Length: 242
Length: 304
Ligand SMILES: Nc1ncnc2c1ncn2[C@@H]1O[C@H](COP(=O)(O)OP(=O)(O)O)[C@@H](O)[C@H]1O
Ligand SMILES: [Mg+2]
Image (cartoon, rainbow over all chains, first blue to last red; front, top):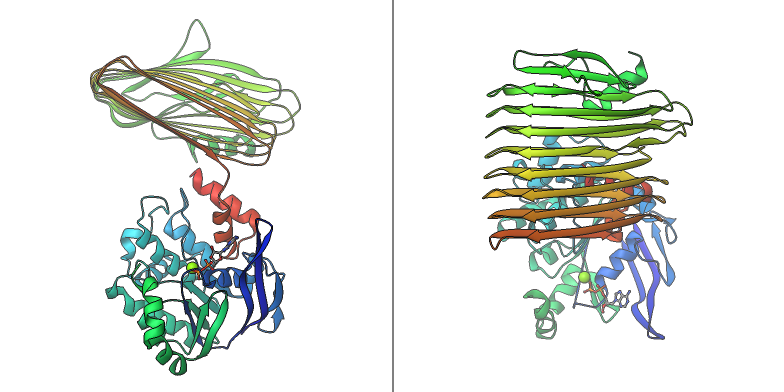
């Protein structure tokens, strides 16, 4: 479904080139859940922004269902079937939860459908459907709405950047089943950035990023034991408990 | 009425049909239809153009619609409307002016409204302004004076969402003991339009209060100027908030002034001008909207 071919991203900082992503090669197949993990600052969010088209590659190519989308706009990538829940959701004065979910779904969602998406992220729909997406929502509430919005797109590839932030354990099961539901759908796939054990556990494949590069990439069963080894655990702790 | 006239009337006063309560409809400088009710009397002024709207005390849940439409080019209409709202009433007043300028001469409406709001009365006042049609300027200069007697309340919602070439709005209010004034203003300007707003609220009464909220969007080469002054002469509370989105080559000037003449006056002013946040556009584009659609949705929500 998605293929990254030697993707690099660098910026110019005080006249010097700073590499943020180096030679990223990655393939996500249909009906797969791939979880990216790694330290803060290793380039995980940047990678998702590159896939969505929010920032351009410096070199390399991106293919979606065989189509070269490297130079495609955000809008067109979205229309092709890429959906992305931001790490830090955006606030809007005046727009409501229903407004956002409706435009995400690109159809006139019935109240019941909106409720359905909200309940997947553990929100009581009745209380939220007409709420404005402004400062009156807490970070955690906004984060859940962001995930619900991404689910509402019914896209082929769903990307979630640290979805566990702001989700209490009680809602976790619902979230996990929503992710699983996605990939069981016709050719759906998930790309999730997470440090959460429960999410790592639903991965088919795990990508470990370290210092702008992919340091490990493989089936869950191959990668997970390495992550649990002392070396990685201690290095990931900072992310776990922040 | 023809289709253009009906559409204008609908746009400025939400009237799909003849309203249930009292009304006065004015077109091209003349009153064309009016109706009184048992509690609400509309009297044409003798000395100048305009009406007195007299609402008996204790009139509850009634409405007055006084829309104005202009469908000719080159009209300059000035009208004086005085409202006398009896004690303990609870009333909805819908005013507003729509100009459909069919030619290149300018058409102008200057509505001078004065409200005398009786003790413990409640008023919701809705005013919409709209300009459509050909190149001729559409000018609207509303002046509103409000006198709130003890314990009364007024909510004033003014909306100018496009097509008005020039507007100069002046609102003066005096708020007595335990009375409260709430003003919500929404303005959208584009092209070479210019919109000026000037609020001057005097909080004279003990425990008087006012809340002014202005949200505006300026596009194209348009210019908006917002001046607000709240003066507190007593134990009172005043809050002014202006929030503006600036786009293209427009210009926005926001001048706050709060004056406390009493140690118990509590006055707050918040003002912000900024462009649409890039991340808002990006979020909506990632939902499949084009950049233009994203922008429109953000503005529409902001002014909703
Ligand atoms: N435009 C930029 N200019 C300079 N540094 C950047 C820019 N964008 C990202 N970075 C840096 O790149 C690194 C990777 O960031 P990010 O992808 O957000 O990391 P992660 O999501 O893995 O925590 C960070 O050190 C960040 O500060
Ligand atoms: Mg990140």
